[in-house]
Image 1 (cartoon, rainbow, N blue to C red):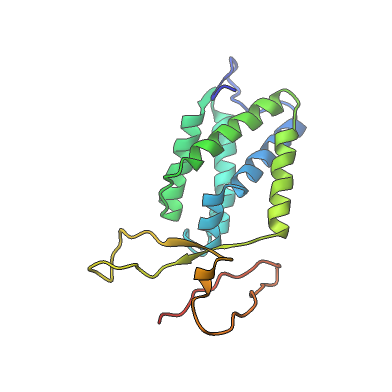
Image 2 (image 1 turned 45 degrees about the horizontal axis):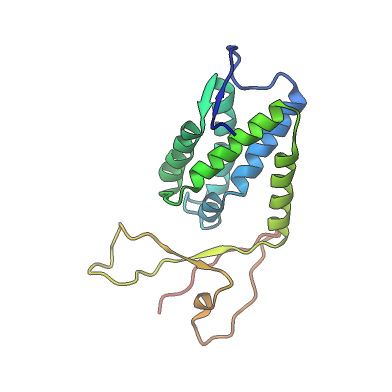
Amino acid sequence: MSDILEIENSNGLKFGDSQVQARFELGVCMALYNWTDLTTAVDNSWGGSDSEEKREWLVGNIVELFEESTVLDALDIQTRLSQVMEDEFDTVVDDDSDFTTAQLLIQIWMECSQGIFSTVENQYNKYEKSKNTKTSVKVDDQTTGGDSEDEEDHAPDLVDGDSEMADLGTKEKQGPVIDDDGFEVVQRKGRR
């Protein structure tokens, strides 16, 4: 698979068939919703109270990037993804998952251009499965030491919601709090 898309017309990488375009847009949406780094940022509101809206905006932004480009490669997409993560969610992606996601988006476009939608369907099924078995990643925002309490360069430590470290207290663990839409509410632990 090539990491570069190039076409000869001036209409960009938008599909002429509206059904194919809709499938491509669904694929972009599902790929971004399945991206663990972005999901963690949204679940922990690193982009503020409108983190969910910022993720939806990013989906539209990536679709527009394809529509406006006649040449596009995975590095262009990676740059856009990492820039939005840093600017909107104050998160630096250093695990190359942004590049992997960019490659997936290229693959989705290439398959859609050939009338193949298996990757889009797989991404959709993966999202539906994760929605039904949602485990959130909680953030331990207590610093692990250092000279200053106001250490701005310290990144929060990610703690898996099911790990023993998430339940360090002697209190009995309460069940998850579910909002009206059926989503688990991430609650901040009290300071000791």
